[in-house]
Structure formats: structure tokens, C-alpha cells
Image (cartoon, rainbow, N blue to C red; front, top):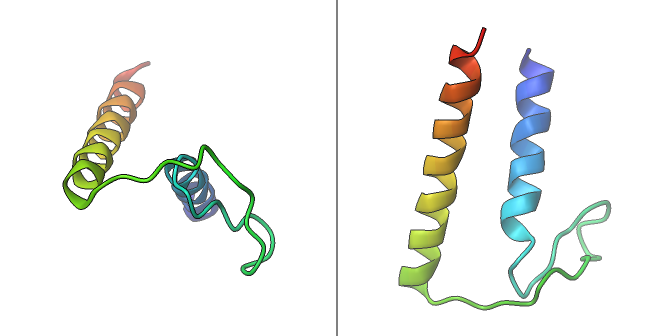
Length: 67
């Protein structure tokens, strides 16, 4: 279970970093794969991150309650 949680956390982290201008360090820390190339202000970034986290918690809760 710990490995599954770590893998899902890593995948979510990569997905959340994808839109930003710095890119994603997929396999090598120095080489980055370019994403969408967007740049957000600090306040907008916090709103986006909060929305993503709420979505993840809601989806996780929904999936956990399914039988």
C-alpha cells in the first residue's frame, strides 16, 4: 500500500506541475520536459492548488466509499 500511495502521489505531483513554465523533471533533475508553459501569480497559484487538492480529496473519498 505504501508503494501505491507513493506512486499515486508522484503521478499527481507530475500532473500538477505540467501546466507551469518551468516544465517537469521526469527522469533527470537537470533536464525538464516542457508542459503548457503557463505562468501564474501567487494568489492564482494558491487558488489552483487548493482546487486541485479539493478535487483529489473528493475523488478519493468517492472512490473509497464505492463498493
